[in-house]
Length: 228
Ligand SMILES: Nc1ncnc2c1ncn2[C@@H]1O[C@H](COP(=O)(O)OP(=O)(O)O)[C@@H](O)[C@H]1O
Ligand SMILES: [Mg+2]
Image (cartoon, rainbow, N blue to C red; front, side):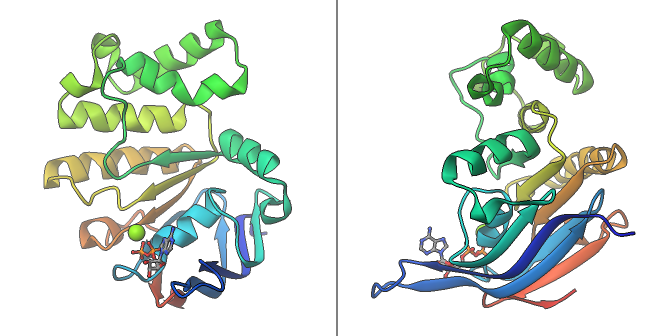
């Protein structure tokens, strides 16, 4: 039986509703993603990829329709509970890594756990494990601004994993990477898929979506999924 970890049902997202600058970024879109799969959302700039990703990532609510993540109707939850669901279940890998430059690698990686009320002992335990896993132990106390591109990338992935999320979202993760970093990112993503994560990536980079590890490609145009 298919296990849909992400379900989008007739979702529309309109920004600035009723104003002259009203934009419908996602239009009556439905989508199902199976647990453990790797899905790429492609489409030209402005087609609605980031908006769809942020709906799935519980960063914004749909105007109409339902977003169901791990069986929970997150679009119906009050903001506070939606945020809680996000922090427990979703990891984000950002385009420019978005590490905090003035903070150490260790502190950056532990950051998502601060609002969780997790003991400092447990925070250090998890962070040290990830530092080891991503070969960053020797950079633990370094400021992230002093890291190489590859180290920053590994730190960003480690940070996305610190809350043990079932779902990982990455918005155009290879957009600013050279081919070597793109290929190492894809290696990491492939391993994360093998370890059971459900992964959704937006990309218009053929290096990303032509990979054999990709289970589905959805193409967006004008706020709708036109092909899969
Ligand atoms: N926060 C926002 N406020 C208003 N309009 C937005 C916002 N985010 C995106 N849009 C608009 O929604 C449309 C889809 O954007 P987006 O989801 O970012 O597409 P993509 O990621 O495919 O480039 C675009 O017309 C964009 O200008
Ligand atoms: Mg985008």
